Length: 452
Image (cartoon, rainbow, N blue to C red; front, side, top):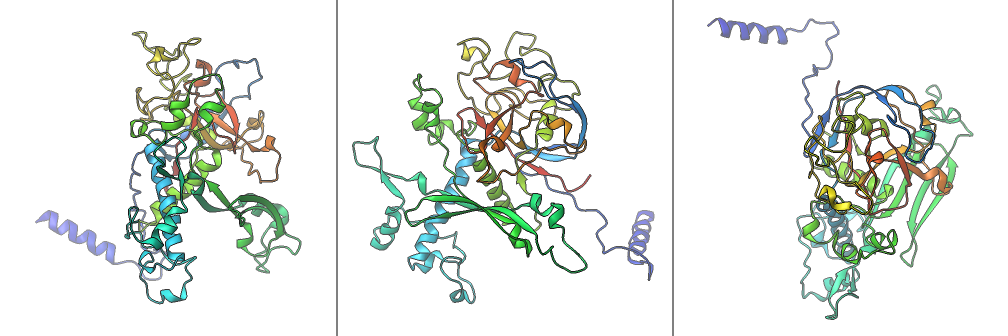
C-alpha cells in the first residue's frame, strides 16, 4: 500500500509542472543510446599521447602531449572481408537495380504515390525485388551482361561480375572552408560575404565510363556550395599482393583473398583511405535508413582516439597488452607481426590472420597491434603535436584532388604482419597516401557517443 502511494505521489509531481516556469520540452535526458552491433564503448579520458620509445629509423619523434578525448564507440575488430563484401554487394545491387529501372522495368521501382513524377534516375528502388541473375528474359539479360566480363582465368568461358563497375558516390560538407574567416556567415544580413569562395571536390563519369576528379572554386552563396562529391570504385585492389611484393609468389592471395569464403573473417586489405571513407558514409546511410533515431556518423578514428583506445586505459603502455615485451610469460608472441628476419610464422601467422586471433586489450579491442595496420582520419605531419589542441586533438587537412601528394598523407597506426615490433607500439606512427592501397593496411570505424 505504501509503495502504491509513493508511486502515485511521484506521478502527480511529474504531471504538475509549475505554470510559467522554465521546464524544458519534456526530454529529461532519459535517452540511452543503444550499443552499436560489433562495437565497444570507449569511455572518455586523458592520456599522454606520443611515442614511448625512440624511432626505429633514427627519426626525431613528435613530442608527447597530455590530451583528453571524448567517449566514443569503436569496432571490436578490424573490418573483415565479409563485412566489406556487404558494402560491395549493396553497391553492385543498387547499380543493377537502377539500370533495370532506367531500362523501363518498373517492378524494380518502389511503388509510391505520384511515382510518375520522379524520373528513373532518382526514383526509389524496390530492394525487395530480387535480381534475377539466371533469368531468361532477354531485356533483363541485356542489362545484366553489361556488368559481366569473361573470366581470363577460366577455360570454360564463364563470366564474372566486373568490379570496375562498383562505383559509390558520396558527399560531405567542407567544414574547413566554412570555418575560414573570409567565409563567416553574417547572421544580421542572412548571407555570406560577397567575396566568399570555396574550394571543393567534384567527380563525374564521362561517356566512356572513366571517372574524373576535379577541384573547383566557386562563390559561396548557400550551404549547398560547401558540399564536395566523390565517386569511388570501392572494390579492393587485389593486384597489390603482387605489386608490393614483386619477387614473391602471392598469386593465390591475389585471386582468392577477398572472394573466397575461407578468408571471410580476415581483415579486408587493398582498400584506400578514400574507399574506407566511402564505407563509413555507406554504413551511416545503412543505419540511419533503418532506425527511427539517427546516430552520429560512422567514421575513421582520429589518431588520438585510435591511440587512446589502443592503450586500453594504461597511461604508459608500450603495447596494447600493457607490457614492455612482445612475448607473454610462456614465451608466446602477443600479436601477428614479423618477429624475426624471415620468420613470419613464429607468431602462428605468416601474413594476415583471422581477426581476434589474439587476446583483446583492457577495453576489449582485438588486433590493436599487428595483423594489419589501420587508417586514421588524421593527416600526417611530423610536428602535429605543436599545433593541435589538447582536447580531442586532430591534425586534419582535407586534401583536394588538385593538391600535391605530400598533402595527401594520412596517419597509419598499429603495425602489421610484415612490420617489426617497433610499429606495434601504441604511440608509433607512420603514413600512407590516401589514394594508395596496401596488402597490410585495413581499417575499423568509430562513432561519437551522444552523451557524457
